[in-house]
Length: 349
Image (cartoon, rainbow, N blue to C red; front, side, top):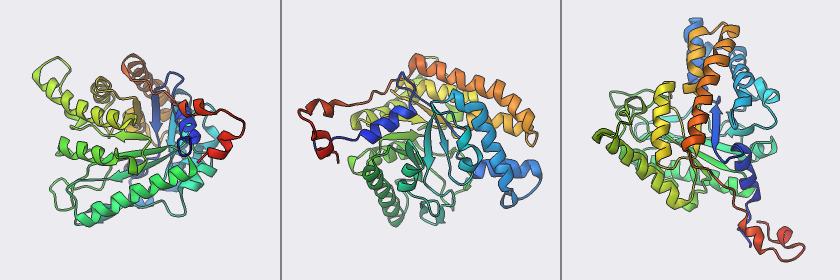
């Protein structure tokens, strides 16, 4: 039994899922996207956005959407002081580890932790899961690839040590010299399915210790063809099916991120993903962006729009998930080998 008991990981995933085994999670850990929105509405530079404005936005998202999500993804610097006390007790807590201030190099992006933050601290703070966003391209410079692999592997080791689920988010990004270069958290319109799929294939290997993938669409989500049974749909579905096959073979559940597409576009993304075996979503901007973009800095108007349109978007996604999503089931089979008092305590890794 030694090494086979990961009760903390299993319990954490249960906390993040619905009773039916679907992950219907809302992300509010975004830092640059929210800062950029606030800056545009205030007529100031993103660097001048106040702590108070960031906190107010995140508190609002938890207050309005928290009861409707199976889990929420929060960052420690803004979301914790804003709304940890507002998070419903039954809603799971996934916590961000990576700093959004990645290091840009000619050969690619390098990830690192938020300062003074760690897997241990997330566990001690009551987190049900650890989330890392890793910008990754298989065609990045060798030293960049080596750094990113080592970083992701090290987080996996720490998550094993503290027995907490590891949620890995992978995003393809433009190189600094490319025409479409941006450091914003936006979907690269020129991304190729092979870049996405090869990234998932690499980090599905057991050595990285990933427990749940948070994945982007293998094709630009805003341009996915209608699901009308035509040739274009079949080509797109094969890309999703390939991604699902990688996760299924590795035994790793997976959810989709929204990457800033519209609610209608994200519904289509999820229809493709569920046909390929996805277990849910962990989305932010597709759910709450429109309300903030239309009404900030009017917080009460934002609240009302979120309560109507944001909740309606989330409920529509949840309905689609119940209808078509694949359920994740906890595995406690290792406990069936227990034959005597003390075996669990002695063998727990």
